[in-house]
Image 1 (cartoon, helix red, strand yellow):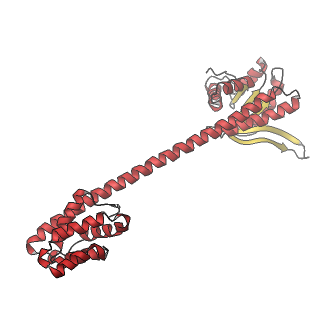
Image 2 (cartoon, helix red, strand yellow; image 1 turned 90 degrees about the vertical axis):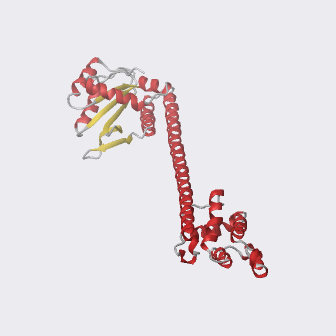
Image 3 (tube, one colour; image 1 turned 45 degrees about the horizontal axis):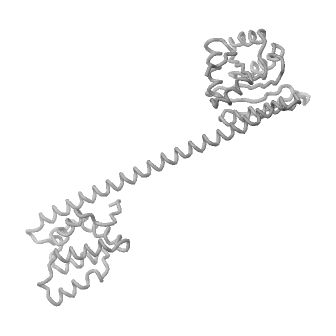
Length: 318
């Protein structure tokens, strides 16, 4: 009996009123049956006293009903006794102690009590499992909302930082700050693998600098960010291409505040025969932020265009 029956429901109560007297041959056996289940003496003492003074006036069914009623009204204090009593009834096996003409009746009543208890336990388990499932879904939903809220807060902070850069007049500080702002945005989308790292040469000098590394759909992309006034040409694009070439199975993303020259576009288009490279303007990033769109969805669309259409600089229509 795994289910906790707080009070005997009417159907079960009526069965117990019939079953317990059938299992007990004498009136005193009935009292002992209840006492053995942990029923306090005060619940049976008046009936025991009546047995001693006027045995014939005591009826087993009436006594069982009286004691069961008191147990049902006993609240939490009698919960253990109610459980134990059910355990004793459902586990009853020695029917030789019953009157011969009541053995089949007793067996039938015990079987019916078992059936009712099992149904009750089943409903209790089902209800508990349902409640646990509802709580799990609620917790999962709350966790999803928390993650979304945190991402939105991180994106909002990056957006604020990006817009503040338009007031920065120092090109070097502005370009350096752009790396941090966009990397913060990639971090908000759980895409950033590494940010702004330098590889030194044999003499300790910086041999190459990479603004960031992101992972999109299990593929790694080196990210380069430029804040130039003039369109980027082959001279500005080729260093990023070279950094991609010296690494196996790595693509590239180049984000620029300006556009790209036709020569730079042709260079990147030819490079698509070897690796994936995507060109993106800061204008496109700002447009995504202003419209509250998904930056990663925009980059995925650009990556598909680079692979399928051999177009490294396709502006995504929203």
